[in-house]
Each structure stands twice: as C-alpha cells, then as structure tokens.
Image (cartoon, rainbow over all chains, first blue to last red; front, top):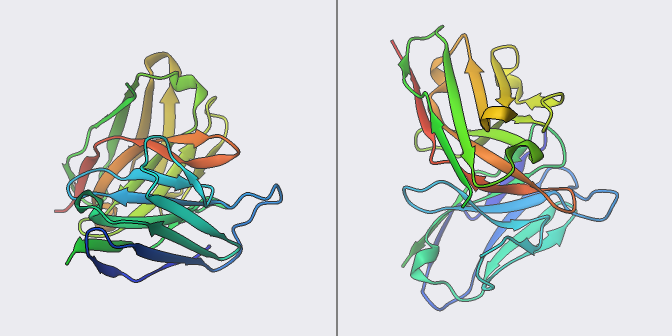
Length: 112
Length: 121
C-alpha cells in the first residue's frame, strides 16, 4: 500500500498571503506515460470534498487560478498564491496509481 | 447539472447489513467509472471501492473485501454498496463519487452529500 504523508497538518494563514502544503508518497506516482497519479481535494466545513488538482498539476474545472499543483515522483506541493477566507477547510492529497487508492491525513487550513 | 444523491444510511448493529444507493443525474451515468469513499467521524478520507462502466471490473480496499459489494444499474442511473458483516469501524459518512477520466484516472470530480452509516449496539 502506498502511504501518503502531508505536512503541515495544521496551517494558519493570513488572507492575501501565499500558502503551501506538501504531500509525499512512499513510492513514485509517476506513470510510464509521464503523468503523476496525484490529486488534491478541499473539504470545506460541513461540505463534501471537491477536486482542486488532478494528475499533479492540472486544475479542475471552475477552480480559481490562485491554486496550483506541482511535483513529480514522490514529492508534491499544493500552493495558494493569495489565500482568501473561502479557502479554509481540510486539504487532502490522494494517489490513484495503484489500489488501494490512499489519501494523506489532511491539512487543516484556517485563518489566523 | 451533475447530481449524486446517496441514501440508505442508518444505525445498524454489529454483524448486520445495509445497502446504500446513489442516484445519479445530469450526465451519462453509463459512461463513467463510479466509486465509494468514506469518512469516519472527525477523520480523514478512505477510498472504499471502484466500479467500471460495465460493472465487469471492480476494486476494493482490503478492509471491506468479502463483506462489501459495489454494483450499478445503468438503466436506473444508480450505484449501490451492499454492506454485510458490519463492524464498528465501518461507521462513517459514505460518499458516492464520479471518477473523471481525462488523460487517465483524473480524480473524483463530483461527490454526493454523503450518507451516514453508524454501526453500534
């Protein structure tokens, strides 16, 4: 089973400032075709998760461009260029390279 | 508008059974892999199962293999999760999710609101 490790687990942020979350996998998530099987989700308080980034760096439909994903192999990063109040919630990374698909523990983002 | 609406969650005793349903609308249900993901109270997300469009390929997390069965009825635009031999650790909100397939597996792009399953005596 691929283990996903996120850091930090808690992230106080200031509106207008950048923020960054790291996700590390226990083995490479890079596919032979060159894509990375890593997605990012945000679960806002009281809501279902929503897809932010897929294949490591592709923004999902309707996701603001202040969100970006990068990385390859075993190390990935979600960046928010300028945090807004609506970005609070828990962020999860997930690998879909091999079953069982596994999620990181989650990073709780809250406003300072 | 894509909608996924789960139902069937309830309080059930350990060892009991329950069937969750997910009604899909707003897209061609038969064209998509579908999945179940769960979240124990106050905890993170756990992938449970995937099912191919024609239902001929399915995958499960080890902890539910032999106890849970994922299925679908494309004529009724519905996804199901039959759960048997339920344990306390199966207590969770169960989400139905659509699997996006762009350049390959590309994440769960739509989620239902979730259905709460509580296993307790």
